[in-house]
Amino acid sequence: MVWSLEIGPVDVNKLLVSAPVSSSPRLTRNALPAVRESRRRRQGLATFAAMLLVVALAAPIPANAADVSPLVAFLLEPGEMSGFTPGKPRVFRTVAAIETVSGEKPTESKAKRYEAEGFIEAATARMHSNAEPSAKGISSVFEFETPMDAKAEMKAELKEEIDPAALRKEGILDYLVLRHFKIPEVPGAVAFAFVSNRAAKMAGLESGVAKALFVEGNCLFAVGVGRFKSDEVVEPVISGVQAIFNRSGGICP
Image (tube, rainbow, N blue to C red):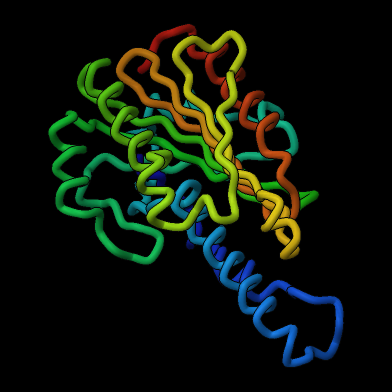
């Protein structure tokens, strides 16, 4: 899935890689390998967090009366995700408008997939935490032509994001543990989290990324959270998904 954001992408790599890796003002020669490893882990986690939470940007559409999308009503509202507040919603309606965080277009195969699935439009909002500025979240809803199309995209995304072979190839599991969790009272939802493992914590990393996907009607919903100073990411996602599900009434759009 692709998410649009009102503001420019957060440079998560810069945020994490520049974070201090040692409380000591001086480094010995023997300490350098450990520092390099800590930086490598930070960069890897940052890259993966960005992939899950701020995968893409889209050209915003002015929110005037003619352009208001009914999908905006299915985004998270203030007070619905514990610890997070939504930013201004954005809507986009064409695959051609999509850009990745780095300004690149989706791969040709992914663009063709969106088109084949009958992509109609999407609404997204970035979630912010005043108490923890580095923490980020996302709420998105993508409308397709049929429920089958929405389910097909959900299946494709899950394969991309939690396929064991891909995770091993990228080295993600070297410093993160994949955990699945349930969303009570939301049938069909698939939720997962990547949290720092023991090796990462020993390197000074205690971070987490969680995401949940579910389909209602013709729409695919996603709620995600990334925290770079804590691995407590599951509860905000659960509360957010439950709030949207309770408001949607099983119908979208």
